[in-house]
Amino acid sequence: MRKYVPLSQRSPDAIRAQAELYQEMATTARMPEAKHGLEKLVARLTALADRREATETRPRSQPPAQGMSSTAD
Image (tube, rainbow, N blue to C red):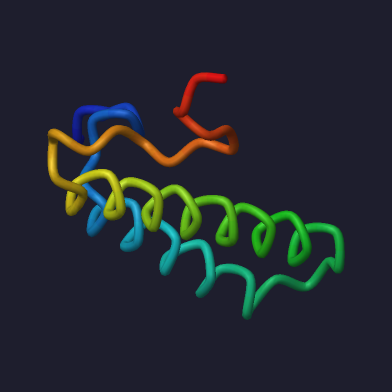
């Protein structure tokens, strides 16, 4: 039995692998509700992996992008 690892501690590749498993499940789902739920989960996990990759590749000295300008009036 594998030990559970929270999403916050998983790598982008591990999150994408989980999303791929859910996508496979969605392709064989018989109930539309199950298929839709799995597809939503795939989208959320993919977005999380994308965000995690973006933060890992951004230089540490650069702050996260925000909607407001950093200049003072």
